[in-house]
Length: 445
Length: 170
Image (cartoon, rainbow over all chains, first blue to last red):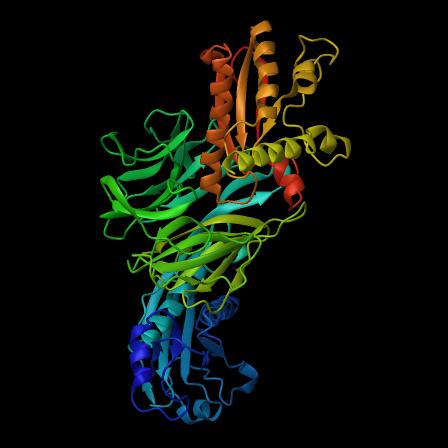
């Protein structure tokens, strides 16, 4: 009973519920805190239904498996352990064969290619109860977009077993860095959320310094700070065409740290004028500018709450950088960070319950989360932190936080990492080079 | 007690600035001089009207304490020299770059660099340099001159650099 209460209180971590082998009722991963025992699943290579689609079928089943195991919640049973290979997508499942190797979930699929079109079918089985979980689904797309179809299959499996919202079929925009540390070249890049190097596209040339890209709520546009004009200015980039244009912000020497409003029609950002930095809002439709803070201190890094009614930001009005919350129209702000050290780059969770932040204390950097009133602060990126962890961004379902970690010194540089909101499953995201300032986009449609 | 603390702070500021002159890093190839003049622009350092003289003899940069944008006594001395040089050489415009060390978030350091460059601008204007000849920019922590991960590098990265040019402000 006590355990159950604890489980209800700590909504933040993922774990398997129920005994592993002898389960009654449907297969389910539930959310709680504690030690994780990943759920074993089998995914026989998807069947190639048309000649020549074998390689694609192999790639798709591999990425589905990687998406699932990448969460730390699932463990793939190697095909070498399989008793049956489940050759045909339509034949009945031999549950006993999968129980014998202790697979709790079974994912089967089939791939067919017609010209540039590819169709992916899949089914999910609860092995121990001997039932199919949900209905079989088919996704259609282009051969070029095969990774997205893998993510969609993995999303369905993840959502059905955990009851969580989907998030694999989403993209991350970030800054790809190259060159020496004292003259770094930076370009905006976009990739699948699993960070496959083959999915990376570059959206700016790297000729001028660019910082901190931020996705629009629908993922069609990106705001970022560019030095192209000779001063830091906010640009908006159309993701599909990679065409960028400046945002007409309020007058001032420099504007930076932009984020979209939740409906994508306005931008909140920092504007420096006469050496003082405050937060402003510009309506992209009317061009109207509204000043949201008015203080001699530094006010920067604003982020909206999911309902758009509040803004969390960073300010040093108390003497050191701390986190504050104000209404979306500005005015009085209340401080929410009271732990030791300095706090920055707050970002509101898409679920609305948490704020992720960068924390600097005793020469170490941490990524952490706190409730929106500042209570229950927890550090995610390992207890000891690192020399430089910075810039958190949330997965669209609010379960995973991505950030960048920089190794210091002349040859050091940043890499992207993700961590479960429970603090488990810290992993580096492969980007094939230095990468910073990630912004996780919405689930694609 | 209070004035003692203040005195100690100033002493600290002086000693920090004194032991971290850019020359030290230029000597050992550990830094890139952002203001290094290209061929034909810098001129000879012995010519007092040359940009080379400005950056090397007058001093093109001042340093700051952690999180601070207050000018130290040493910084004011350098800026006095910059102001009189700019008043003498009235064809030149000044772009003041504010920089921060890497201890701090990107956004905060951009704002801190803006504060620093503005502190220099205000000081130069107070010494008679026309505001119209000065522009400011912040690079935050994007352009360190020294790349090690300790105070010996951080102290020279917390800087404001006055970049001079003829004509339009770069």
